[in-house]
Length: 188
Image 1 (spheres, rainbow, N blue to C red):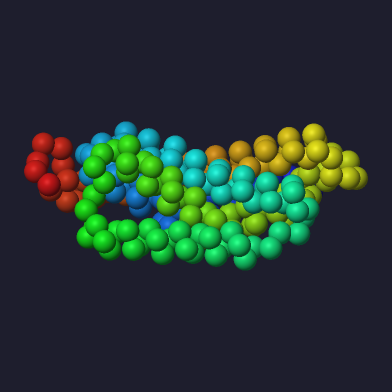
Image 2 (cartoon, rainbow, N blue to C red; image 1 turned 180 degrees about the vertical axis):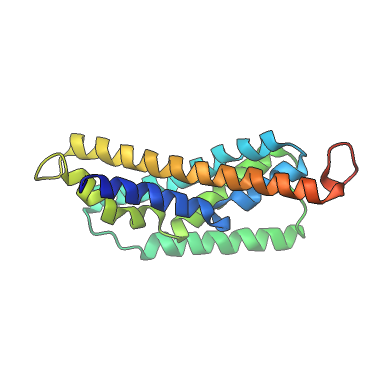
């Protein structure tokens, strides 16, 4: 049972990430409402996962090249600058929506990457990943540890996406049912 706890922690952190509206479910629901399609809301999970995976991969690459000691200053500062640039771009554009669904998905990927990096998505998994990677033996090895770490990241992302998808679809469904202007066939 002791070996199961780190895996449960990884899955629980993924579900916790999925509950956070800053990680994308609010944007996924909004895209679904804008396009009047639950399918669009659920398709929004792919860009959210891509941004999250890119952030976690950045931390994993930094940890692989710098060892287990990673200074979070640069990734956090970079994400902060990116979020400020994002806000400035929207202020200049005066909140006009992007020209199409592909642009919305690209923006959602960027947002997911910036938010995951700013929240330290990869860094928060390190305490759970160390026992998982050490469970195969007494030392961290490139092949065994990398496989276990990849499995843990996949579990974390799957839990996050399941939670995000449920909340996004539920939020869109609730808004459509409670607000007549979002029902299909009516002008927005």
